[in-house]
Figure 1 (cartoon, rainbow, N blue to C red):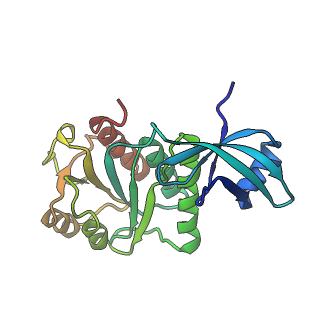
Figure 2 (figure 1 turned 135 degrees about the vertical axis):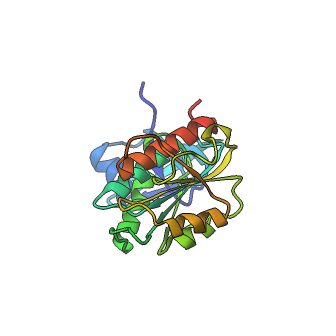
Length: 238
């Protein structure tokens, strides 16, 4: 038997209303009926078993029967800061970062960044994160932020135990990724990379430069690979 279908609902109570896109998906795509069992999650770590009790034209009523805490939510506190990427590549990074267990994602602009962010793109990133959380059985959805400069992004990482900066123009890492703890902020750039001044500013705020190997990686590959390695050493892939 397949697992119950999952739906993101911000306000969950004993009698919960499902409407909008989630209602349309449940009724018209999944064709769920009264009596069907589903799982609701609120985006903050709690999930609920529920039963559909009534289906109307624009909403359905669900009766919650039990509450639990998802065992699939991340235990480590990983914060990914990534330069805005061209096309839909930022969406790809957000999707995969969510699957890998990131808690926060900061998208930023920097001197050599040629992509841009607007309200529609930012809303789309939040939808991608919500859908990825649903797909990978998380009960929490990563927070997503946008910063119009690298400096603001760097300052947002204050308080993290380890802070790593993926830098293409250093030959040796200043910190071994295998030595990180469970609180880590990671910075990786856009297609244009960084200036040395940007790197020095980040170092002044406690970031340590790391190299991602001998080959030049595409920006989206670098972000996903960097986070994957960090996820392994924080225990999220073990």
